[in-house]
Image (cartoon, rainbow, N blue to C red; front, side, top):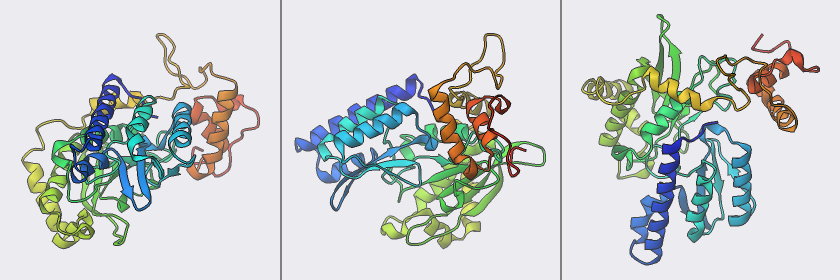
Length: 363
């Protein structure tokens, strides 16, 4: 689970205050409905046929107990005690009151949650494998890379008003549980023949009324160039994507119209002018983000290393976590023993009743 730092919390608090002011000005007649629309959409608020709908981001599909309790509290206080978990790691409230949405966002910020860019014609929340970090078939944990992308895409001034919504997914496992080829951009973390980590880039995927499988435009992109290359992809889309017809505005339509070879050529031409300048996803930045995803059940002794059986946590909380992990073990391809061990850092040999299954991918 991603934990906010001081800057994350400040940004979300300021965004809530900004949105509350926008809603107040709209209620006072200063902001028209048309002027408010793009502002509320980028804070997750839709107006549908029967009422508002608020979409809340669940970063990388993981919730703490405090966050889950807060979602339940919000659904009871501001909705009809029901929440809809989506396929892209969001939660939707389908019956909130329009004027109460700033209060909901304030409640979310108190537990390190938000609704920023969950709607609108912008880069939506970054998604990945729901078993990221414990999946035995993953090359590396993709979540630090996702976090680089989230930091890059949040409030990006050039890509705040794209021709249409834009979705990115990342996968680092043998099995693609993130369905990256059904996204506008799919990123597969791979190694080249020299053992260097990089990314295979797919573009133009999507579902909806025109289902399309994404196509490869780069077999291996060095990790350090990830952000500058995505800048180029989005600039080509922003330049040529259709704005006259919302049903023809997705990048999959543009890739089909230009042809994948021509689209890739234009991306390479744009990227060649800026690939060695500006901010990018270097090893130091990925490593820094990795520290924010450490399991809370692991503790580092003073002057020592993290060791699988050193955690002091026991009792009810540990049993509940074990139950949850065992429930999802089959879907992850893990036997119960390894699901428990990798989720908590505990050695399975110390827990009677958990034995290796014959089909366990961890051996």
